[in-house]
Length: 183
Image 1 (cartoon, rainbow, N blue to C red):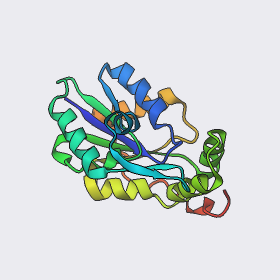
Image 2: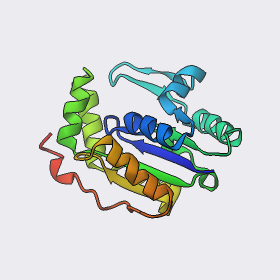
Image 3: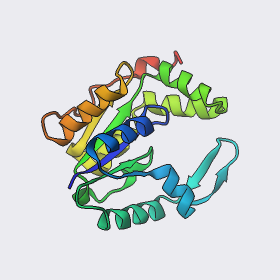
């Protein structure tokens, strides 16, 4: 059984890539945002930033329960909070999807997000926040994939190579700091 976490800043392609990967591998997909909504795993809303205030502990408990009851053929867990699931013994591979901050900014503006939310996420991407947190929780299981110039199928092919052990793309090869003040 392969348990794959796909995480990254909003707008990097997690949902699109995860759906295509789930279809290709014929394994179920758990979308963290849907789970948070369905199970009401949040304390409230931050009106200024437009976020749900997710209860990370409850989310992780729910994800562990799902993992313990998951089918033998595997599972994909997708979402920008997926990397907080700390039980690395149950996780085979973590993929942090990245996108150049200038491109990410355009994607997030298309979602009609408030400027403050766009800026916060673009800065988080430039500073490698999701990668840092993923490495903190999962160490050498973390792979970092820059999706900026790749098609969805190319990203899916790359993740399959990672899962099959043919490829490992360690964190630290993607550096977007130069975009910090350009976006």
